Length: 178
Image (cartoon, rainbow, N blue to C red; front, side):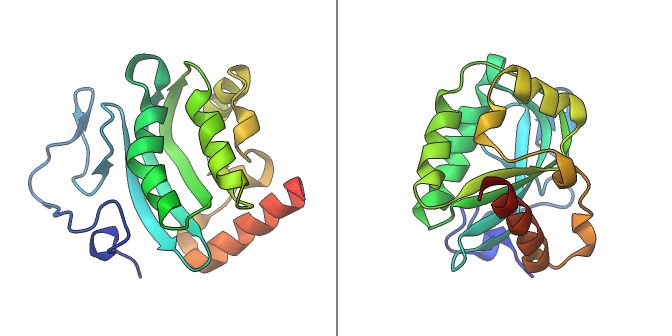
């Protein structure tokens, strides 16, 4: 239904993937070559779907979200989110079941990102993140920039059409913030 490498508006347009050469790794572990590198040593993304007309993107994450050592939020914001925001994306759904840990630093990029999307009635939703990762977001006081937890941590997204998945998340987010 969607290939980021074929989407002219995607930050990964014309990216070529190998099914046989594994070059990206998180620490000492190689990951599938179809995960996209955003410049981080520990956090990779996969743009699963983008709908520019409705302004949303569905993104899966893998690795360790490490702001303390590698400033991953800077890479996520500057190399990925800013590109999509410039193309009209203001609603981000991040699937985080493969985010194993979070290490905090400051909240400057989170605040900036929140302001960028909030000006356009946008939001950033975290879906299926591990409880301890959400707790670490909360302890760092950056959970205020996301919509997370509750029924957003129990979504079977793999069985849904991307638009149905978006509608489900959007309804939940609107109910919480509206």
